Image 1 (tube, rainbow, N blue to C red):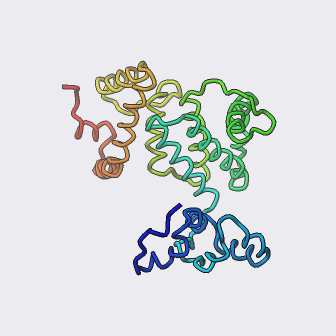
Image 2 (image 1 turned 90 degrees about the vertical axis):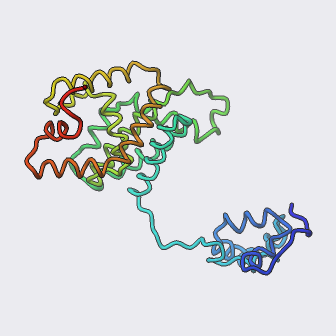
Image 3 (image 1 turned 180 degrees about the vertical axis):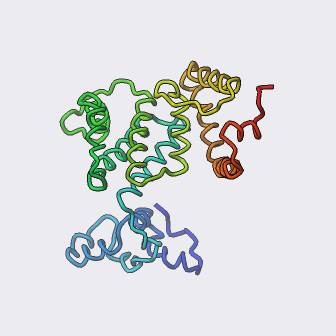
Length: 279
């Protein structure tokens, strides 16, 4: 608790906070409660709030809908909500942070996009994703999410070890659905997509567009070396590539567009900027 000795100046902010000066709980209520809803409940059930431990009766006059900047004119739709979850999951993934947090964020976004897809497109792609994941895949993804969501029926349940790659795979699915719904990827998603493509270049059959055999072989060797590393070392390189991609994306895009406008092939553009050999 803050005692009565706390100095209070005459600034507008301290005027707003003055009724809360003796109770930190009151400040938290003001910051995290919906003022309009709170006022409505107070009017409907005055006795409850008059007797509450937060003493809201004498503090409620300091709360209005704009006192703490809680008003907003920006509405968040499902797609934007999913984007924000995906981008946060991507940031946490490359920072090698808690894998369960990455998993939960990615799965929440993926499930929203999976449910949203049939409302945006009738091409049946969500059904293909459903079949690709399969019953066991869904069970694994949702099982981990439910483990972290509920404890009423399984309070003593234990979760098997969890690896960051499990969350990465869900991000991949979420990014695919996001692109098909929105028509494009955010910059962070593009950087993540670049990293996963590098890891699975041969496995998913990405065609090598660089016709310079020596340079293409060098890049393949780099990819193979990265894949041979332990995950912690891999992701350290991945984080640097992730940041570098975002920092250079616009410049590289302009470079390619300029080269194409001059009639250069992709290989010729690389020759111009990277050289024709490793020397």
